[in-house]
Image 1 (cartoon, one colour):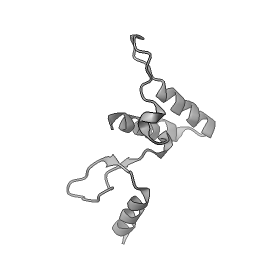
Image 2 (cartoon, helix red, strand yellow):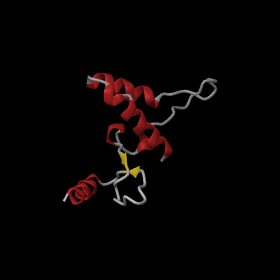
Image 3 (cartoon, helix red, strand yellow):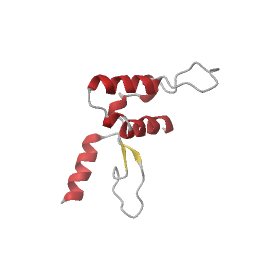
Image 4 (cartoon, one colour):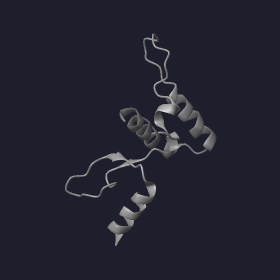
Length: 91
């Protein structure tokens, strides 16, 4: 889960500011290939199989289960459920 969160945050901070889809794809591919400084480990930081979905489909927020007193930052796994929650909040 921590790797997913890291990919999500990198996209929000960096990739959302990129203009072209080509640049966004280059960024995503670069994120997947981050290497440790010592160069001893040649494994990717995270691979797409570990994500279980496209990096652009990752979304975390505090209103998956809306509770303003105790917000929990968690992954959105059901986008339709999130839409219903947001519609209920806005009523």
